Structures are given as structure tokens and as C-alpha cells.
Length: 93
Image (tube, helix red, strand yellow):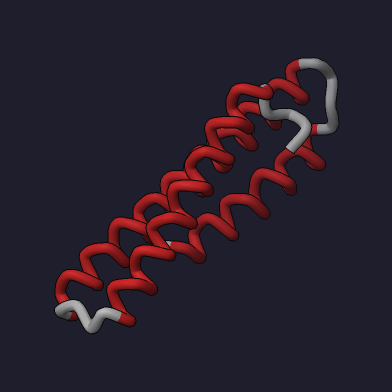
């Protein structure tokens, strides 16, 4: 991820930390035998947060690939990397 600006890395780490908190909260809800619908709401919220991080990374890869090609990078190599990221992103949906 060396192509991400430091502020974006910090943003992603902050998001991951929040997700860790959400998962801990879900665990506590299960142990406290909270209603299933409430637990599922929290699971959906966590999944959405993870998908948002995935989208940010996909966009960063697209930007990185375009910038590298514009600066003389190998088009085929960059396209392959971008396609791999898109494949992984699509597996989440």
C-alpha cells in the first residue's frame, strides 16, 4: 500500500479500529443473548464498514494504475493488477 498517502492509511486504520470495536460489541451481544434482529443489524453495519474499506482500496488501486501508466508504467502490468483488485472486490458483493 505504499501508494496510499499517509493520511489515507491513518483513515483506513481508524476504520479498521472501529470495525474491531463493532465486532467486540457483537460478541458481547451474543454472550448477553440479545435479540437476533439486533445482532444482525450490527452485523450488517460491520459488513457495510468493511465493504467501504474495500471500495476505498479499489479506488486507490485505480488511481495508482492510471498514474503509473501516465508516468510511463507498463499498461499491461497495471491493468492486470487492477483486474486482480476488481476480482477480489467483486467476491465481497
